[in-house]
Amino acid sequence: MHSLSRSQLDLLAARLAEEGSGRVQEVRIEPNEEGVVVHCRSRHYYGLQVILAALNEFARSDQTSSPLCLRAEIHGQHFDLPIERCSLQTAEEPKGRPAMMISEEGKDRKIVVTESDMRRLSQMLASEFAAAVVPGRYLNDLRAELQRAEVVAEDQIPDDVVTMDSTVILRDLDTGEQETFTLVYPSRANIAKDRLSVLAPVGTAILGFCVGDVVRWAVPDGYRRLRIEQVVYQPERAGVLQG
Image 1 (cartoon, rainbow, N blue to C red):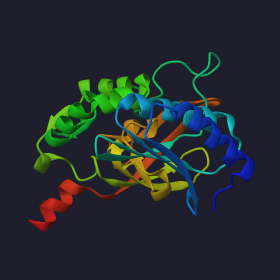
Image 2: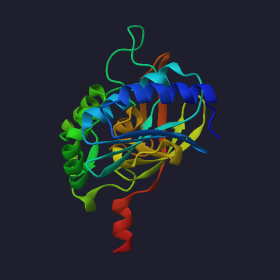
Image 3: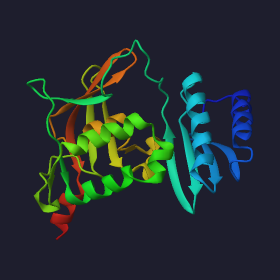
């Protein structure tokens, strides 16, 4: 069950009503068993952007663990945008790219992506939606990964590589904990359902790498390291087996 108090919900509702006034057609809060979902309906991306900014600010200042999700409707399209509870990078935090690959030699490795994933990801990065609602540094990280990627046909991708819509098991090398995620496009992201956006730092970090690889990204107290333990499901391989 969500952990926001009545006073916190009222504070959030008042803030969103203020920010959305004259900018969005509808904004409402729906607490449920998975956390707190904010519904927003807008005719243009600017209205969505101001609500998203207000939610990000609330998530950074709020100390509860309740998951937050923005369920947006714009131009008849629907998007689920999970709100990350993390601080923006400060001067004391590690510099450089938020996510990177660590090979055994300590050097970056080239990722492998399919032709269809490259095409769809490139279209997403050029979209008005991505520019309006995703932090620029996250877009730049994914662009940098794709620029150095090896592009292969769908039937040539190794079955241990993380592609879009793959389900993977990741192990935190510092805590030993394991987590399972499906790597998805932003419109399908829902961290409560273990659907990880490719534009989230971890999502960008694992795209195109394979079982046994280790990725890391900057957090306020240093770096977190994850090893790709298993690709449980890969859509390209599933298609081959079904054929």
